[in-house]
Image (cartoon, rainbow, N blue to C red; front, top):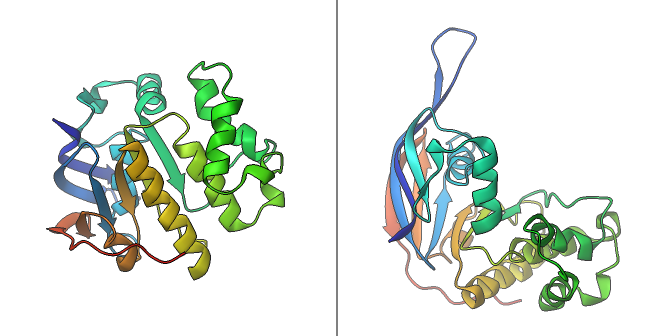
Amino acid sequence: MSILKVENLTKAYPSAGGAPLTVLHSVSFEIGAGDTLAIVGPSGSGKTTLLGLCAGLDRATAGSVWLKGIRLDELGEDQRAAVRNQHVGFIFQNFQLLPTLTALENVQVPQELRGEKDSAASARALLERVGLGKRAHHYPAQLSGGEQQRVSLARAFANRPALLFADEPTGNLDPDTSETVVNLLFELNREAGTTLVLVTHDLELAARTQRTLRVRGGSVQEDYRNEPTAPLRA
C-alpha cells in the first residue's frame, strides 16, 4: 500500500480580480513506504503548496490526500494535526526551532506532544547522532545555521515518523555545510526506513532521491526515476 497517495489535487485562492488564482492543477502521484521523492521546479511553480497539502498543513480546493491510508481531506484541523504528530516529521529551510528552548528541548517537543515520558535520553542520543551532543544545552541563537539544521534533523526523527517532509533543507546553508546536512538526512532516513518527500531547487540534491517530480505552473511536467548516485563527501 502507498504510504502517500495524492489524487487530482487542486488548490486555488481568491483574487482581487474575481477569478480564483489556481496554483495547483489536478496533481496525482503515489509513493511507497521507504521510498524517496524529490519535487523540483522554479519559484512559484506550486511545489511548496503541494508539500503543505500532502502534509495536511492546508486543505485542497479539490482532490484528495491519503497518508498511511488516512484520507486527510475528510478530517478537521485538529484531527490532521494528530495524524501529523503520529506519523510525520518536518525539516524547513529556516529551521523553525523554538528560540526559548535549548537544542535538547527542541528535539523533545514532538515526543512531549505525543505524551511520551523520559524523552530526554532518546533526544540526547539523536543529538549525539547528528554530532551535537556537546551543544545540547545551547539555545538556537548560540548555534550556527548548520548546527540549527542538524538540531531540526534530530527533531524530525524524534517521533520515529513514517513520512518525512523536507522543504528546501539546504536553502540557507553554504555548500560545505549543505553536504554535511544532506548526508546526515539520507543516513538517518535509511536507518529509520522513513519515506522522504523533498522539495528543492537543487537538482544535484534531487538526484540523490529515487524519483523526481518536476512541477511547473502548478502541474506535474515530468515524473521519472533517478539513476543511483554516490553519497556526497562530508
